[in-house]
Length: 315
Image (cartoon, rainbow, N blue to C red; front, side):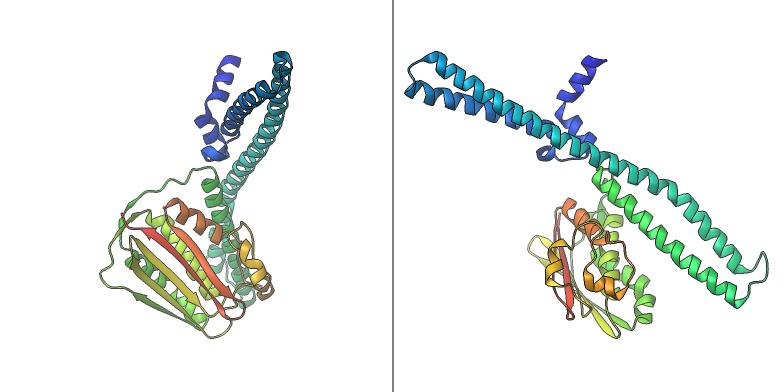
């Protein structure tokens, strides 16, 4: 059993998969690289020492001491990385398990609230109906947060494989605009979509791309104060499709812009507006776009609005 465990430790791809890390972030691979660096340093030290020191035993002692010091440092660094990777893996698994466990009770709660609101059990007074609506709204927020946490944990564990197919990005955007149009009109926001004609289809995962556009579109509408406008552009640029969404909302303060794609981050001016959100949407969007081989970015000015964009390769 112990021999199998040792072999498992030596299997670098398996260890990287276990931690959900890329090869260059994997502790075992880093240790291998450090080992090669130690060998090269030892050989270089021996070559230089042989040239300037006459006693070969002294040269060998210096090489051994240097190798031992470098090896100890490499072990300490690798173990530290390994502990961090293990803690990150356990955290991701914990979030995934808790999120899965929360889905059922939240769904049951929503079902019970809708049943009570329907009046099929007993007559509902206007005051009770108001309370039920508050409960329904908050359970919806909880369901959204749980869903985002599940997606993040799957991304971190590498368990969100794309199911690619040929799709029209233009048609997908038009469908999502229709879905959010009621919310936009209620918020006094007008959405304009100006796609380029005769755009090619792209080979990607429509469900994952839907998450990206939904997040960007929802943010654009949600963070506009009063009457506003959201402009969406879609065009072909070289070997990529270029998507851009521009709003005249609250914008992002310059000091906060470097953190905008981090998990759970919400800028200070948005927090003051007391708008809903988990701070996970942009992290999810960046992860999906990067995994699809594209790029994502933004420009923003506080109180003037924001422009978010992404590219996707045409394959």
